[in-house]
Image 1 (cartoon, chains in turn cyan, red):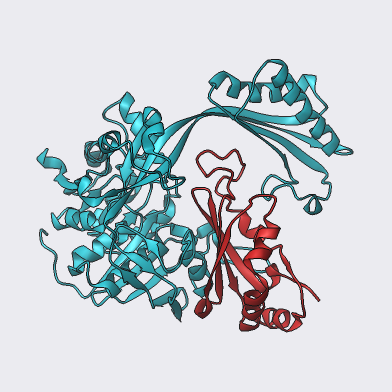
Image 2: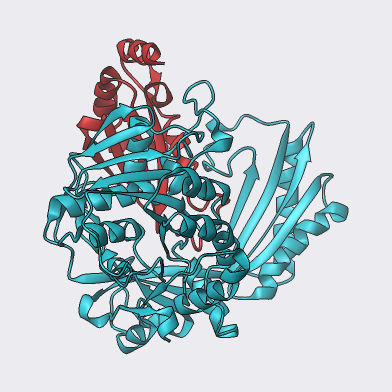
Length: 452
Length: 116
């Protein structure tokens, strides 16, 4: 350990694609995937804002809540096999995550290990110093969000992940890192690729993009009975990538697991959240997948080719989390003859009762679940169903007004048309917007957990 | 004879902010020709007009027989503040597949059935 050994090929597995992703397939890929590296991606756009709030209440917290449960299952079998792990479960407190994992590791029968922590993605001070920065969404200045700001984190690249592994660490814990960079990082480390070696950076970033949503590459988000069959969807396996030092990549999945990995699943995941296929911007490159093609090498094994890359941009993208009031909502079910009529009356009654209480809302949304809640209100698509659920959701700066929405729906039980099956709730809204900042404003650093 | 996109292609939806990204992947070369000709951004916007005023952009990936649609302002303000029951709009791929395309597409449909 300590220096990257020259190797011809590495195998990187995906152990999680979102914070609460299923843990058993992560254990399976560790036990049966013959991996060298395991990457676990657990940070959605706004989850880090919630973790930043946790840290404000308790300075030891602020890491992904499922951290310990996931690490208890994954770390011991991974370390016993010499599999090195990278994860962004550090969220708003990577060092706190490293320390709490260390505290528990002896109870988990973990072999001794070293842990590197990536810090420096948090840029709230930079945001406060630059209220003039334009928001990417609408060009308005950042200033208006600052009083309500909950978090601000730059998407770091694969270079700091590689630097983490360069310390010899078995475990690299980060905060905000671009999702594909969690996978490109081990490649940069193992093969010492340079950022101006565009074909390799392109293939590595593409592999990371394909793997970072775990089961979405291997038959998740895909099955349609009778049309698009997926074998043993219940036992869906997570994906892995074989990467050669010359940049060649093949993707596969845990041997013996359920699911499917073929050109159809790879094509769907290639374009997932891609927008312009010629310009997918990551901190590591501007990826062009417009000429990518897939080749089925054998069952559940696909070769990638045709990815191209342009140099990384001079900026980091920062996601700013901010408080945006409260959302209250509730549902109630109606069935049988004239179900829709009674649901519609229920909606009118709730709206009128809220109005008579003097409550107003920035936005209110009405759904009839079973008719229009997912695809909208085109009447031609909505034959009258046997049963339907009314749903009302509203946004307001006032918590009590938000809670009133659900309370009035609950009251329909005894003071509305006949129906049943109520649920309701209210929560604070953490919204996000983005800005771009010059790279030199961000100072990523790698720190050894035990050196602190 | 008209044909549903469902019979010609599969699709996946994802989100970024207030923008929906929906890919449409043809099952066959014949289906690809029909989709490329008929599944225009204008037709997609017309089918999504109760959700958004657009714009809709379309990208072509012929080697994958895939179209990628980027539909702006379609997610009720974006995942984090949307009041929708499906704030990510992941179900919108199946709305795309309900679009009916006009014209004489029996060949494309027959070829697709042969694949499955």
